[in-house]
Length: 123
Image (cartoon, rainbow, N blue to C red):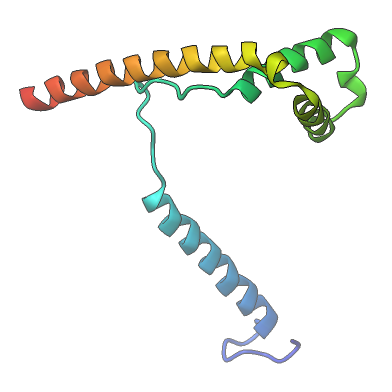
């Protein structure tokens, strides 16, 4: 890419870099237009039983002092394998917490949508 472009002193390789950078920026701008933005006052989504298990296991790992030697990816694999090893009876408390969280989420979403509808009709 030592060939000079029509613009004196600028190589074709440098022009390609600028064009590629411009394409990347344009793609990011284009994608950001379609990105779903969640309203700040919307309720948080419910956690699954696995999420509750992960939170509890993470606390146990941190308390044991193992976390300093283990990265997040390793910890996630460890917790995932522990989750798979649990029996249905052992998973039940986490699934119950997830069900309760789903009830909370549905109730809050119902209230949120009603509030949004009220505010929308006032405008």
